[in-house]
Length: 244
Image (tube, rainbow, N blue to C red; front, side, top):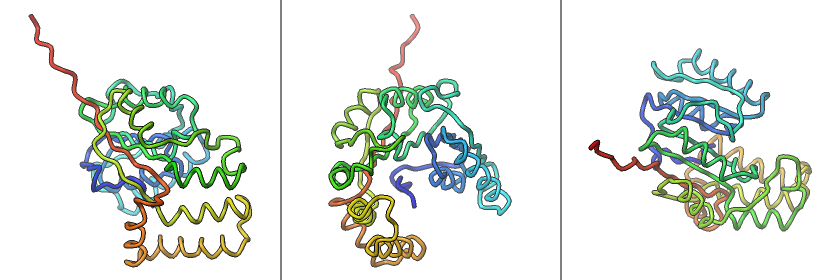
């Protein structure tokens, strides 16, 4: 289930991609399939080991084109172990709402991105996320949980302040918002509640089968209750200074 829309965020074979806070690796895997040179980085060593196994399995199965590369590594988003301008593309999906120093993370992403490079940032959308916080303290008051809710204008202002130029936004995963509202209403750790189980089955069916009806419904509902807010930006080239 991808949050970044690659029709709005073009990726070319050979692009150097950093999936920052990659989690289970969903965006990193898609970039690998598209022929990129991918680095998937996360502070969670257990998840990184799983991502590395999947990279190896994809290579063995021939899912990635010739020339594509994939590396999974542990790292700190506030102190990235890469030189300046190392990447053509940076993706950070559902991560910044967890990190107290979000400006520091943005600064590091800008540092390792080449001029002209592209960044995709996704965070929980304000409205649906606010409902979750209202229904359940346990939803966000956990170690490593969400510490803020972004309004779209606030996030875009921080992106611009970091020196990036936003060029597009959209919302995603509208069908997932009601699921999380149900989870918060019945207890975030209560997976046995009938409405939660029933809706989860619907989501699994949707993800596996991709029926036209739910695809159309989600596209129609995304502007209203999309669970995620997605922003795309570029790093401008510095003005050329002619030698005197």
